[in-house]
Image 1 (spheres, rainbow, N blue to C red):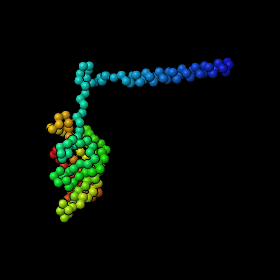
Image 2 (cartoon, rainbow, N blue to C red):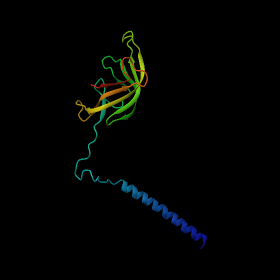
Image 3 (cartoon, rainbow, N blue to C red):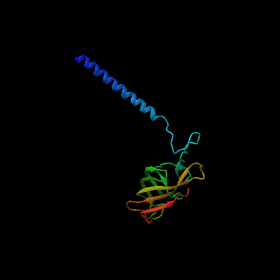
Image 4 (cartoon, one colour):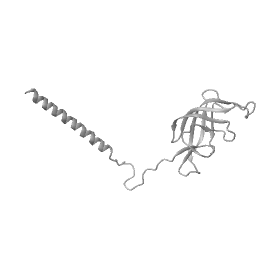
Length: 164
């Protein structure tokens, strides 16, 4: 057998292998793009799966917020605000963030008080349909966990009902 003939056959085999690999890849992509019927799911002509409702937290002004960077806790006087919120999860049942709770110490009174920072872990939960916005769900509970000092007289782990 001559070496030129061997090189031609080897080159032809390599070219065929590349072509076969490309065809297999193309076939796999084609199959992957074809919808597959779910044996346990609805049959032809049935309605598509429902789209989950948007999930929000409602602020003091009754505006929907998604992953807000700030959230006012004391709507009446503005003396308690979550700032620098970094959301790690958002929905469908809970949302979790870390940030800082800026609380007015109200010493000697709230008008003359200073805002003090408290690192905090925030969890939103208990989503419910929002009557003011049909098709939207809002979180109805907030939990604050202070890993260090908590603002007096607040405990290190406290939950509130969100009323807006």
